[in-house]
Length: 419
Ligand code: NAD
Image 1: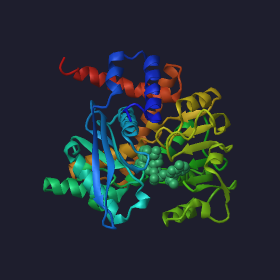
Image 2: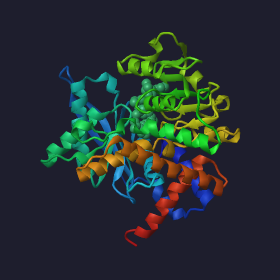
Image 3: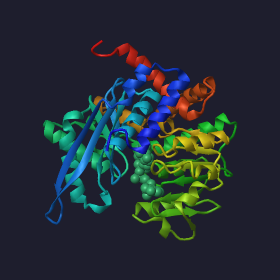
């Protein structure tokens, strides 16, 4: 597979080109942003519990580091490949630039179904992967974090392996660590909380208030979907549908989010939940709700189902859940889309806080973290909204334009080496 083959890469790059056209970006800048700075593919052989050896394919891509060290998650999923990883790294470059972080864009992953491995096998996989990519990561080079299929434990193994190789503890090599080893308060909920903040900002822009009549459907009830649901329920909204890979559950009177969270945290599938109506993931996306939050995987709303998506506000919790055509269809009918690089930036913002706290060895309290998170997202949301008005364009292109403007300034100042 070539670097440019994944649908997500093609889609992300097309969106970038469109934004560049609208703002009249210098083509030389675009030319430099098409290619990742560095892409490493590694073999990750491990011994399975039955004694046999299996080799997995691992990747780490650093897209652009003009603004600072690379930042981006590590994904363990059967669909991971070089091109998808490059696309996600590219999105990280724009996400960090958009919210004003001194960080570049990176992403990594292993082509694996983590559900098929034991805890010991997962540990071996993570440690071998960390060893294979250790020469291109580090607190000043590239700082991984959790993504789909990885969590705080994965980061703890990664950090420990990197530290063993260095001979001393290096907490700043990853973020999303458990609190006991230098993680930040609020990191686990940050992405979902940020999604909920952004829905609130969008409501405010339209002169509306979130209340008991605000209905919300959430596609993907995981690390992003759960805290988004909790926060919006706290704001008074009615969460009428949620889903996981097994299917979706619906209750017109609102779901008991605390119960649903306990249910899934205990390892149960939503399809087995009692006293709810079971619907399909596809049906959830098309519900007549005020707010739809696709927070599972990319490419779930396409030109085929977009005409049937009725939500007034769509908050892209996942990376790239709406294709470019879907965004055009929904924007044309007046839907308000909060683009992924803004909407789900809460995670990387608090990851940045974790990195800073680790470098200082000085830790902040939860109120400080949430209030700084709120302020950065509010400024970024306002910036994107004003950019959309200035260029008479949609929020998605406006987000890319804002990010590109910051990157362009920095790239010009640093220049091209050799000149
Ligand atoms: P997760 O693994 O914790 O949760 C994913 C959820 O989606 C689970 O409920 C899972 O059952 C469901 N799911 C998986 N495949 C599905 C499918 N085919 N159809 C329907 N549901 C499916 O992952 P996460 O960390 O919540 O990430 C979700 C998305 O958000 C990803 O696109 C990720 O890149 C993005 N994201 C995550 C973070 C973060 O901090 N975790 C930050 C930014 C962006």
